[in-house]
Image 1 (tube, helix red, strand yellow):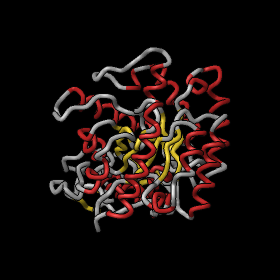
Image 2 (cartoon, one colour):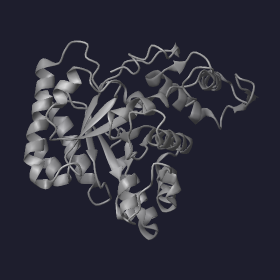
Image 3 (cartoon, helix red, strand yellow):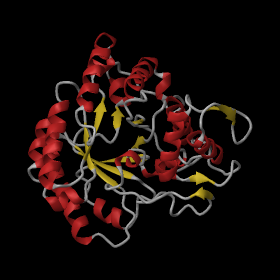
Length: 353
């Protein structure tokens, strides 16, 4: 997979690099820009993938949880196995395929489904999303993943989704987040991203943001997201946390739905989130363009990484670079630039990431 292969109007100083599930984890964790969820029962996924119908999509998640009813689970499992088998046997040479994930239903279903997955299936799969991830089920999810990866010899990643009441409720939040943190520390080689459930958090209170507002305007949810960032974005953690799903879509780039997505993406980035769950192809380009690194940011990041210390003027001359306080930021900018590229100059038509 490589981003922006069909975006000739974007002028790059550093072009995006190719990546796949075997890319170094420290780089790959930044590669999931727009991650589109689809019901695992959808029948034409294979055809859309091989014919590049998803454009510049970097990751796709086949959902066996909220997107389908429990009665549809057997059909969904067989459909996913068929998609993975066809990809393994008939994947076109040079296909620009997104990373593929499966959102399982619960730990028991994941364990049962894991027994159906053969090495050929797993070769096409990057990993799994773990819904309602908490301190009670977290070890079950990752132990199944660890066993599946070890038995097959395939690299497989887990993306826990933090979205349940024990994190949302103030009186249990900090204890629960600390327990989750300890679980994730046991499986560093298998944690690719941490994801958050903005819709699930909102639903606890019967709330829903409009297309004119952002998830951060829902104060009780924004407060929870702030604390998740506090626990998992610390310098010694090294996690990437993905932004919550945006529920509105439109093919009109000047619509309130797309403008709202852009506003929320800006706040995602400023607050430390990287990547976004999406529900429709019209959202792909809007999301991915936000992660292209500006020329100024890249030059400053490189200067910081190469500096012997101290304080110096930025490349643009409009801000201060301080080596030690900005070191963690600089490392993230350079890692992101490898995947999403660097703009040729500050006047390019893609906003600063």
